[in-house]
Amino acid sequence: MSIIEIDNLVKRYGALTAVNELSLTVPTGSIYGFVGPNGAGKTSTMRILTTLMEPTSGDARIAGFSVRKKPRDVRRAIGYMPDFFGVYNDMTVWEYLDFFSACYDIDANERAVINRDLLELVDLPHKRDAKVDSLSRGMKQRIALARTLAHDPQVLILDEPASGLDPRARVEIRELLVELARMGKTIFFSTHILADVAEICTAIGIVEAGKLVASGDIADMQRAIMPTRQYEIQLLPTALPAVEALLSTQPHVMSVQPLLDDEDQPIPKFVIEFSGKDSDASALLLTLVQQGLPVLKFAEVVQDVEELFMRATRGVVT
Amino acid sequence: MTAQQPRKRRAFSRMLSNPIVVKELRSRMRGNRGVVILSVYLTALTLVMLFVYGAVIGTSNTITNVSDRQAFGLAVFAVTYGLQLFLIAIITPSLTAGSIAGERERQTYDLLRTTSLTARSIVLGKLGTAVAFIALLILATLPLQSVVFLIGGVSPVELALSVVILLVTALMFSAFGVLLSCFTKRVISATILTYTVIMFIIVILPIMLMAAFGSGTAYLFSLTSGVQPSDGVITLLFILFWAIVSINPVATSVASELILLEEQSLWYMMFDMPNGSVLPVVSPWILYVPFALILSVLMIWWATAIVKRKER
Image (cartoon, rainbow over all chains, first blue to last red):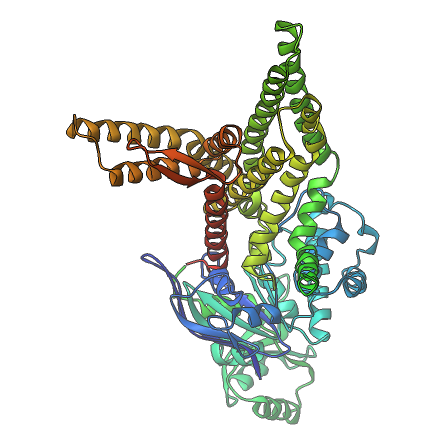
């Protein structure tokens, strides 16, 4: 089930094509990282999804509603947090939340309960009567997140939710997003900070110059972009010389790289480039054990998203 | 009447449940800004009234006959009314020009537009609170203006008419402010734009139209020199002249007041045609009020369309 479906979306500003035939789907309940460098078309895409901007062509559906034909239904289904924080002067946190929840036709008594719960969720009940513009950037961001939740939307569309935050605030926002996903929300957020993606995303889309260069489940993408996996194999420090030769003759092993210790001395630790499936990896381990090698560790090297990103966007445009 | 009441009440409660209205009222009346504007407004009017009073008392130490007293009462009324019109022209842009541009400037415009709020609620909420505040100013001056009843020369009808014209003018100016606010990114440019447009409408446009009308008529008469223009032409020219009067709040007020004084009529006057016949014409305020209302509705509709429109 996809809750966001983007279909051949194009956005041109005069001669500049900001979004170029972008299509992607976001599975319901996922935390979807929309990754790309600045100016890749992320914000334009999000403004189209939030019904603020008319696409040049193509369409997108959120919770089944077309952003072009059913903008009001789309707005009910989404909570939008732009990459800036809109403040009214001299408004307290409570008034701020009450105002925005009133904008969703929620009745006053209900609003009081909802906003108390939301402040609880973002861990700021003690700031209820503080002036919004007196809060720290991280607190404002959490208030902004609370604001997007008042009408219990199915989808959160967050533009760079962690940008400009200090490391601690960033971690807090990330934890909140994970918590919200656990509550059943789908989270579609843009970022150019790959650490965010690696930590919390279940799926990602990589966009570059308005085009989607890769999209999907992180594990699937790894397989697609990087057909080979790396395994780290560590042995007890015995029978060292024979191992490298043995490894390199095994099926699916593309290369063997011995690792060195701090003094550049070889240690019984190898990283192999492996093109087989899980069953092949298991067979390789069995072979090693049957050959009498004292295997201490046999583990897939978890690729970081940075590496994935670099490979996905290689040669496109930078 | 009884059938209409619940609907009115619903419209009123809907207005009050518009979150924009609540927010605007809250921030307008927060602190002492609202009180300060109201106080300054009333103080200015009081001072002017005292000044006129003092000036008249100072020049003629005895106002004994009735017509002098009436002229004095009317002078006080006219001066305060003129000042009110001027103050409304000054205050309205400051209240409304920030309505949409201010949301843009504070980066809250996009937030509002992704909520369930309709473009109409946003525009009407902004306009409604501004008009409500100006209405408060106008109504607050009623006790002050009623002082002229002690002097005489002004009837309650004139006061009521002045309030109607002021309210309608305030609505029209507010609609200008909200509409022009839709076109700019900054509050300051919206404010300057609104002042310019209001100044143009209230001062420059009537002068231009009257000058054009005067020179046009003179030219026309010079063409037909010696020949009496036909009744049709005279009627047409008079209607044109009356139309120019009826789209300007100042000219409308003066002309309506003159008709009240000279013809003792709130509604119409008789214009003496050169051939001896009379042309009945309605008092300008009857034309001005619907003109201002229709113009306001059109501007509100336009502003709503702009707020509704997606970015391209």
